[in-house]
Length: 496
Image (cartoon, one colour):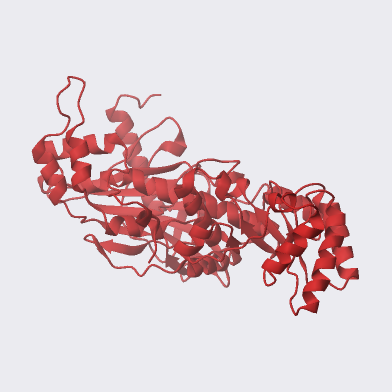
């Protein structure tokens, strides 16, 4: 299996924030490093002011965790870090501890391509608190970015209404590794292919491309450029026609197409990369059809996103394939998902091995964490998903339950007994051992499409989507409320 971390010759254990390591040291120093803990990774708001998100990145997470460990160069680097007093930050015994440590956590996660919503755990990590803590940054880095891009791709593909979308963002992406992750996530989200050849190699994603304006400008005239390219690539001849005059370029492409037919080949089509794409594509379609090239595709590009594509469709644009680059690969209109990774309960032999639920307070309701060992149960009626219940596995969930909106306790929904359901988190690691067969990127893409088809169109609207019902199971809500009230009382802020 090809994964992104294969591009790095060194360990990725230091792909973390320093404070994760200082906490790890403090856990070890205090003898609490083996205390069992549970953390959950989730996000607080749907991206792009939309109604859903597409979970993505688990494939890379599995690759990182199966190789997790500190190598000699990591430990040498850590040994050189100094505190404010100039003395070493980490002692040798701790570095020896890291050298010998082996990944030992249980990890549960939603499969890639699962449609997910705010507050639902995308990943649950359970194990020694030191190890759980160190994983925070890398999990957020991988899952939040790829979920953001997969969601953007799904929105773009929905605006294209079944027409192919190609991801063209490599040159504008944030670094080569960001570009590779974006290409993969965009494919999971629904794109038909990418211009990124390395992503094609690593992830088995279809690659697509033609020539640039520089090709045309390197010849004496446009016709010579087109003829030469067709001679070189008769089985992949798609011509960029807007270097000088787009519609004249289409007419010249028709001439090249006729010559190709005489040699037993067929022109793939043309690409428009500037100007009034609606008008130009309509006229280009007319020229191509009248010349007998009704099967030739028209590729449109030029800073496209879901909003521009929807507008062009409304104007009657005759584009068959949409090339989307900068605004997809960079998550242009929302550069971060806003994911969080929160401790929800701990236990140790010191407290009789009983789980102690934990809750983080905030004056902002959205930032108050949810305690427990969490799972999400998705309910469906016929071919339609109808609600999600977040529940605590220690409390379980009844057949027939009530869910409470975590942001508004007056909003509740009852799920009738016997309603078909499934739990979203699946086992990935047990005791540090991989127990999950990672689906191919193609299977993840198919899952995205299958998942989206099960939600009402109002939830998938590009603008002002309906809010899908997601809530805390009633007993979990009551437990969270009780802990919040206790914590506020204990901290002297009950009257605020």
